[in-house]
Length: 149
Image (cartoon, rainbow, N blue to C red):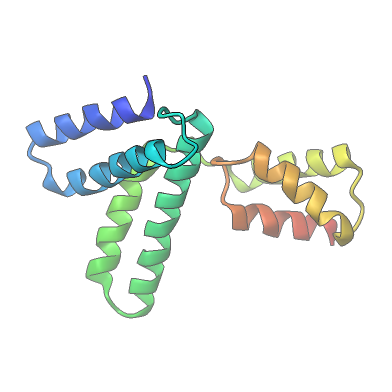
């Protein structure tokens, strides 16, 4: 079942259960999928990789917004953004733990033969593709820096 179909089914379920707060993030995801499918150069149906990228972006936006609201003392808005983040996170792959990220990046470093910070670009390129959606980009970069330093 495609992500679009899952979202549509969940929208129907939320409507039947009268869960208005869940409808907004679900509709936002559906809208983003429809927009991405109609963009110039798109074939209509999104690939799994494109769907993952879209969900990751939406989740990151919610998390960043929640951080800004919290810093500015708007906990009511931060809670709303975090709730939407939780809804979107249901459709993302399980996030890797710090130990798993360290192990994966250590394997990539030995695979590409990286030995110093000058090789960070090689490691980041491969790590970003391999760990896409499974780990946050900032966590990947920080781990690569610490292991190469």
